Image 1 (tube, rainbow, N blue to C red):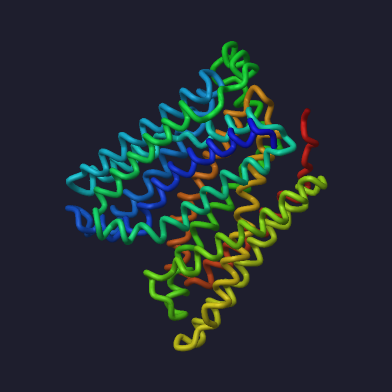
Image 2: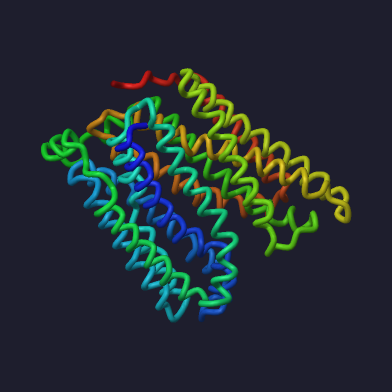
Length: 402
């Protein structure tokens, strides 16, 4: 990476990290804290309030991506962070569950993921873009792990309202980073955006077979990720680890997996083996689901003697290796395959499918866990991952553009 590419990658990864910390830090305590509000005694309404963020994200990723192609990346990112901050204030003030749901929906309306990743693609070369995307993916993974540790502590100190005010502050810091730290947009993008017709490139993106493979893949990845968390915490508790100490499994698994990713993914990309790394990562996701099925079966057969924490810790480590490698490689592949004038549109579609995957994973995962138990849930996740592997197999990775 050049110095300019390192600065761009670090600043945009920081923007992502601040925003994702603002999102993740609420999740571990949301259901418990929301139950204290008027209307919070209905689990279905609490779940809806929690999930509305993903729905508004899904609806607005493409418009934000198209807007960034037309009006520039920085103005759209700043606007999205302002919307997220307003939603945080509404959620902090919320006197009941209905207003909390409104705040979550407004938070989700600041759908900047496509604009940020398109900006990162604009300011990095193809040959180093996977590394740049990996910095973003690593920041997201670390924020997830940090939130598991901090959220219960903050909930005890400042409550849910205080946590939402913190998320507002993080969004405002992100705006400062975009304006004063992130590099200027490349002149060629500014010129192409000036002549861009609204919506141009979207049809081209939707007809692109390679992009659609990646879009379906990110849907499966995040559906599986959210669905498996409907059962993994219960398996950890059954293995003897109290809920408040689950971070002791997640945090080491995330950190160790990032080290492995750095030592494996980047050398493979330099050797032109990005396709192999991509397919191996999908295989790891499928293998983990099969391993979790075995743990769930063993725990069900002998409820008083589960396989223990070590198998679960190892499976989490392998899962995060595959997940983080895919989080780094898939956006990089989208930016390579997409026409330069439609990167925002392509990444908007990609992030829309990602958000829909979150929503589908939560809804279907809960239903599968209730009707077929954890073992049935993991079988469904394994089948989905194997179908994704078959779908992705014919894909070819284009050489880096100069």
